[in-house]
Length: 116
Length: 142
Ligand SMILES: Nc1ncnc2c1ncn2[C@@H]1O[C@H](COP(=O)(O)OP(=O)(O)OP(=O)(O)O)[C@@H](O)[C@H]1O
Ligand SMILES: [Mg+2]
Image 1: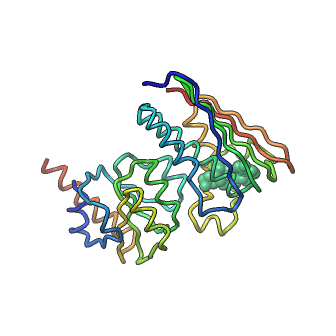
Image 2 (image 1 turned 90 degrees about the horizontal axis):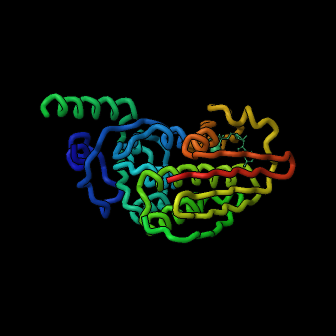
């Protein structure tokens, strides 16, 4: 499913409008430990996290993740934002928790798999 | 595919300097991509290097990351001046971490960095002297 559709359905707020959302999402991974995400996230995954430090962008780049969703209404600093734009990684924000975000996304992706 | 000679280079890493975190690995990734090597190989190198870079930044005073790229492999040596590791076997265990709270707040400290390096490398070697420093040597083959 396209990131753009997911952004709309989950009402995610793009923090980096300059970064396009026309990319395919292969699935998702939830995690706040960077080395765990480096070990276990899959290529093209959406990464759901509460981390906001600039290091998250490097993790997303090295793992070829499709986007980072920052939960719980957290706001990354401008460093993270600038880096995300320069590395072409979309950052999306939500006031919802990781549980709600992942749960909803799981439903959407599953429903699509059943149709397709 | 077009690597026909050996490339060498190095990066200096300063302990605690988180604003530059990931720069060495990013630059190495760019070098490899421009040399036209496979994505999967680049990914393994980037992950292993990033973990090594972060450990120097988190635990050591300063360090140097050296690389040698040849047609069939890359050799990475991450050497630091720092506290060293008392029990390497313990440090290699997944989940073992002495990362302080301020580092954990940024998402490091899962105790998975060294295991990640080992997993992504074909050859992995770590030597450490308490009070002097640590040296990680990795070879990743294409
Ligand atoms: N260069 C180093 N100098 C001193 N101690 C180190 C060094 N590298 C690792 N260690 C020790 O080994 C432990 C395990 O390292 P490892 O990279 O596996 O996990 P971590 O850094 O604690 O967490 P993570 O890498 O998952 O964010 C560290 O917590 C630290 O005690
Ligand atoms: Mg580590």
